[in-house]
Image (cartoon, rainbow, N blue to C red):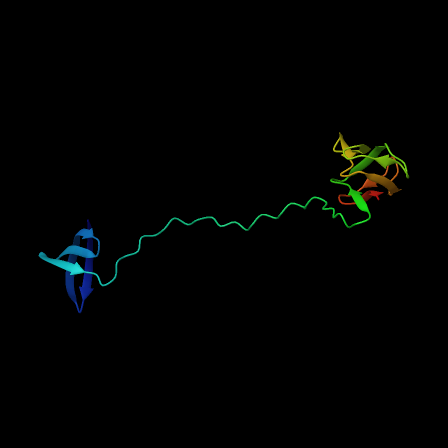
Length: 139
């Protein structure tokens, strides 16, 4: 396998490692064979594993509770209000179209999450809004 040359106290030694199985090494020192038993087994190197930090949780959707009197309709993404399809005092049903929000040149329909009456409208056509901005309040 491998050959090593040592010098101890001005004496030269040639060591040939012939085999290595588990914790027993067969070697030859200056022509004399020896079996050496290692006290601990050599640990094999492991391939490192890539550890990544946990991904951030996406924003939770708006949760409504039956006890709350008002429900806020918020902007899911930043954009510009293209049209308002309701006015204060309108009675709406679940999934009725409330407004259209343009984001990245795409029109996004914002619909009612539950039935109710429009209490207030916090935006106007042409207004830019940020994500999670309150657009409409429902009672």
